[in-house]
Length: 311
Image: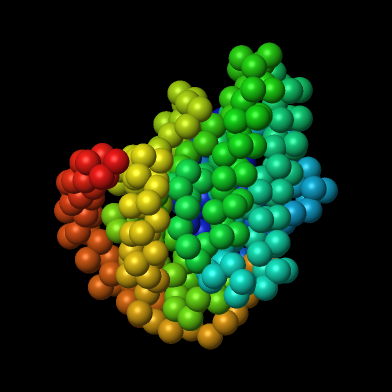
């Protein structure tokens, strides 16, 4: 089996690479920066991958994306993304535009290349790493939310247009909060570093969902204990959701650590800054994830009753 992973240098992409390496797959790993890719490639070889090739490529460059595959591809997993924090009016226009370009237009560039390979073969699975933020909206993440909603529409369009090819599948795996470096590498104009609000899943959990989806393709896979509850609140109780999401985002989605405005890795690769709160935050997440999901369910039910009564 040959698997291409765009966005393989960290986070969920790295976890997917290692998961397939343990199965002895042939891997093609792609991202903008070669040094972290080489480190992931070495880890994959040690984990049992039968072959690993590294391709330094920016998904915003169609020619570079076209050069990633070399021969047949069974599965293509796309997880490359950048992010920016801040109120819409505080985020510079070029930063906003670059996030949307990378996360949405870059995904379209990958689709053109992957589907061309799959059409020649007559088969293949393309899996996109989506997000809960492709179905709900949070403040201070407007560019990321815009691109993820667009990605969901793109995937749906591609599924409709490949109905003539029953062995070609386009899938979306959408997690909630995941413990990856994107929150620290994101551009930031919010004054405080971002963080994934609880309950938080590991990249390895999302990677396992992606591997299962590739084996038995499904249109959409959701990963996260509280996702359905949050989506219900967003759709069924808009006034309640809108009143709560801002305060909850400021408490759970932004850390206590202050940061001066910066462009993060939006325009060029950058290592994540050190995260002094990471260890204690992971302990809190581990203790509180289930409690948070249960509490959210109870609160959601109570709010639904209250909202229905007010109507």
